[in-house]
Image (cartoon, rainbow, N blue to C red; front, side, top):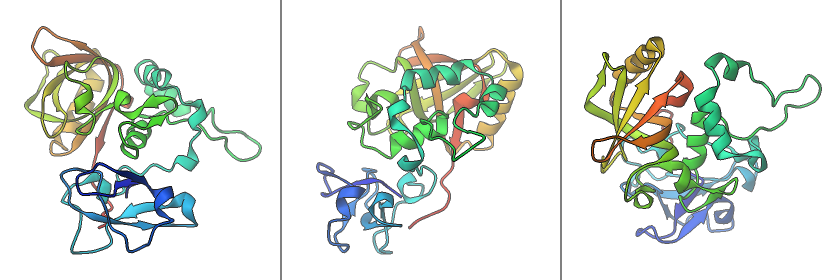
Length: 256
């Protein structure tokens, strides 16, 4: 499922789902994933507000594990308050609050009336939001490419990844060191240009995330970090203070 696509196979002209509802339903568009040749068609649920692109023709499906062909990265903008989104504050919350505090923080709920919309705040919510939009688009006055390092935004990071960033990564061949309590990833997914070190101070958190990654070593790993360069070329390191900084993205719920 995708909220945007391209009019041309060269991926030069973007079209959003709320624009495409005015088009002929038989018009084919192209998947946001440059490695995927799926042809997408506009679909709608309950009117144009819930419009999205989908590969409905079996002769032009998504490639295996294309995230835009699954429900793994669904993001319904109508459920969130973009005007209240502050990316740096959201990232600092990932770094600073305990898992228990996050779970009990229900500031968007009220005892009377309907729940109030809140901005994206979990690592999954922010990642899905970023994947649902082109890298040059903005959400909460912040460009997508400034928030997420992935295959699409790699061109923005010619000298490395610094500061508060979410990375879309995969595991390295030797991906952990239990003596140092470190996990090693590489990103972006296709080029594997940069190496990332996840540095843990808490042994229980390290073991939990290490085991989760070990059991899903073929999946995409997303990490919210405050990245700094190391003494190794193209290596960057961030402290991981809790489980909420890391998530595993599994391709499930095929829409092809």
